[in-house]
Length: 231
Image 1 (cartoon, one colour):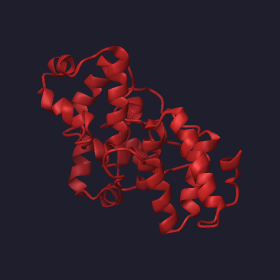
Image 2: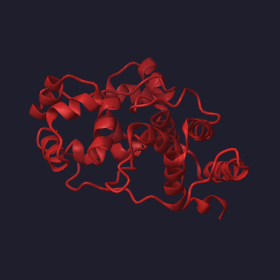
Image 3: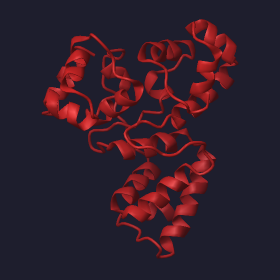
């Protein structure tokens, strides 16, 4: 991060002080990240990538290119509705997206539900057991259970190892293939999209149909350009 972070920060016209203020950390902490002395926690890393419109892999200097995200019609509509809704409307949207999920939708990238669901799916697809995963990472099985049950994230070094073991990118593992300069999602929007991305295609279709009924009933105004809901 000692090369990518200052470069991305300067491209966005942000000072260390402004980054520290937005992330709720001391400016010396940001300086330590830029010197390569330490890494942010995964929740901070997610918020930092969102702030800088960067993919996680590029920010961690694992990828040579910053892979942006091109939203499909449903995702663009979801963001459109969120941004045009009042607080009650936003609560309804976030409640629907996390319907049936364990744990609340939390701001600033602190919720790990999207990561947990993606990790469980990748382990199942590859036939990787919790015990085997724990042995490869030299970590207790109880820690792996915490990750699978939305009780936290691994450290960045373990996250990178985990993505290698499961043969996926860190962005995919974190359900964070959503950053785009045009979208520039805020922390709450990023959380919403992480959870959305962790849903199956069938679940997304059902949610869109449900939102269409709710927002078309007049309870909440459907924003201009959001007609894709009923398409």
